[in-house]
Image (tube, rainbow, N blue to C red; front, side, top):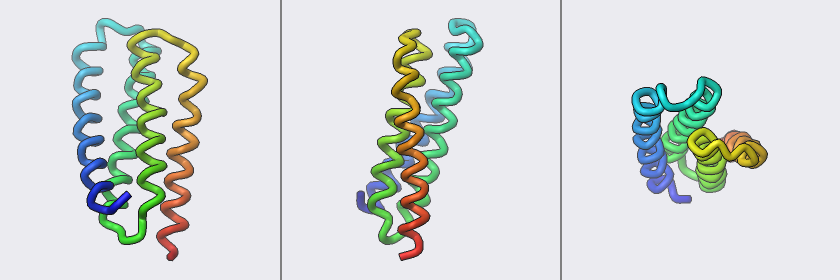
Length: 116
């Protein structure tokens, strides 16, 4: 992923994170049980972490692999938590750790590529 695209993608992901956070705080607080709301909020938090990392990596030359891993991780990790929270489909919880592993891999690859 090119640096400019990583920066733009991170900014969009962050904007969506703010919107989802507001949606969770205002529209879902009375509709979801506390555990499902906590799952939704975890998705928002990790989406924002990935977004900020993408924006930082978008300023770094040579960071092409890590942004792809971070974006995939955010989509899978946060996305499954959003769907799980809103639908109650529990088997999605088995997919969520794959997103977490992609987020971790993205950060490790970012560290390795920073040394080049």
